[in-house]
Image: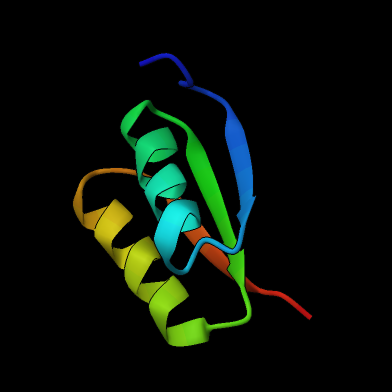
Length: 62
């Protein structure tokens, strides 16, 4: 796990490349903060990461 103990903040992470980056960082042990204007898709990405054993939180962009 290359990023164990690290935190990544990823904007635009509710879908597309941002969501994939969040998943990748989480798989590598990073705690992930997902930010996007789309609440429901962002929360789904967080739940997916958590179910895979990762740590993630969602924050709405203003």
